Amino acid sequence: MTNLAMPHPYHLDNWQKSISDLITNPNELLAIAKLDPKNSRFSKLATQVFPLKVPRQFAALIRPGDWDDPILAQILPKVDENTHSTSHSHDPLKEAQFTPETGLLHKYKNRVLLITAPHCAVNCRYCFRRHYDYQSNSPSQIEWKQTFDYIHRNKDIEEVIFSGGDPLALSDRRLAWLINQVEGISHVATLRIHTRLPIVIPQRITKEILEEFENSRLKIVLVTHCNHANELTKITEHAFAKLHKAGVLLLNQSVLLANINDKSLTLAALSKKLFSQNILPYYLHMPDAVQGTQHFAVTELKAKEIMEELRGMLSGYLVPTLVREDPGAPSKTRV
Ligand code: SF4
Image 1: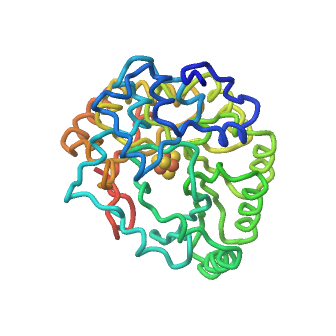
Image 2: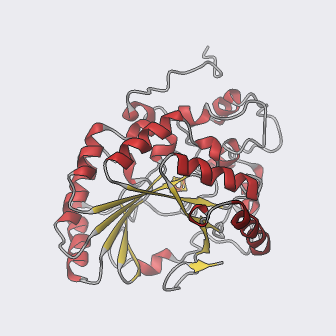
Image 3: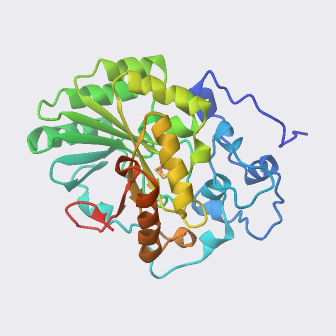
């Protein structure tokens, strides 16, 4: 019989092994967290709507015996997810309206977002794409050609964003192919990559990927996604130092999440730790109104109070911009 709580080697030298050996069994996660699966907060049912997926080294950062641990709270399926809310929907950002080609979102004039990967290394319970139909939005090889033709034709597009899913969940070869396609479009100057991989599996930052970034003619901006200082370790520090050295601009976006980071002290600690790892805080997002995530909601009034306190605690460049996404708006809305 397997001892679910037994320590694990985490494949620290091989990110592919880590990503193919994720924790998907809630009982295993709860055993690592030293918590009782019979507790009424946990819901196995919630995993049927949005499965559990967590890299082992990320789960190892959970404080044992604490239901309110800020890492556990981001990844554990809870009974609150099963409550239906009339103010929440499956596609609150109306992304389907802005999809002229399969897997391409064109919401803002000078930039497009590509759904490059249909999966992530971790399933964050508050994810705004938790109901996204990756199956129908994953381009075939012919559709990829149409997508890049669309960018070629639209000369206003200066920046391409790789999103997902998580673009760094792709193989180096696939990623290199995608970067190469963008490099071939002369009016595109910047490639932005939205990823949580360097936080949850920092060994994803391999020599090969660093060479790819270093040798690209594009300005590479990597936007990480980190919500709490406890997610940043010596290993992430090492990964971000290598990216910084390779000339990659490092920014972070967080989501303001009830009972996880909705305190000025918590956010100040996050900003300082990000900065110590060469990352500038960029956006703090109000959570989107996605069905199953209503328990993460923070009111705008409370968010503004937190921001006011934060401005008194940090230098201006360490204060992220508080934003929300309004469907159809020409840019993010500052709160
Ligand atoms: S990494 Fe990003 S896209 Fe993936 S589940 Fe988390 S929030 Fe959603």
